[in-house]
Amino acid sequence: MSSNNDYWKANISLILKCLIIWFCVSYLFGIVLVEELNNLRLGGYKLGFWFAQQGSIYTFVVLVFYYAKKMSDIDKRFNVDE
Image 1: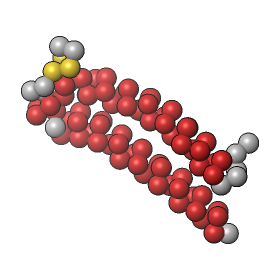
Image 2: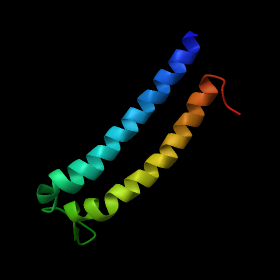
Image 3: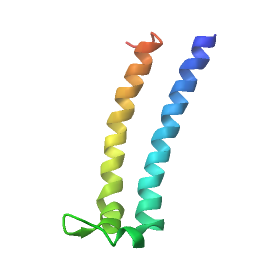
């Protein structure tokens, strides 16, 4: 039974890490810190604007693939892979 609990702890930990990253990029960088980030430029665009319009979407897509890869690793570690 301990292995089952460890599996879910690893799963929830991964989910929380992904949600924290997504929150920071979409809410903090795109809304709260947008004025400070607008002092920097990325490809000619203000960085705060870029995070609000594109950065959070790119980050979300990367997090989806990251989550899938890490869950595959966790599944293999706990012998629950297909």
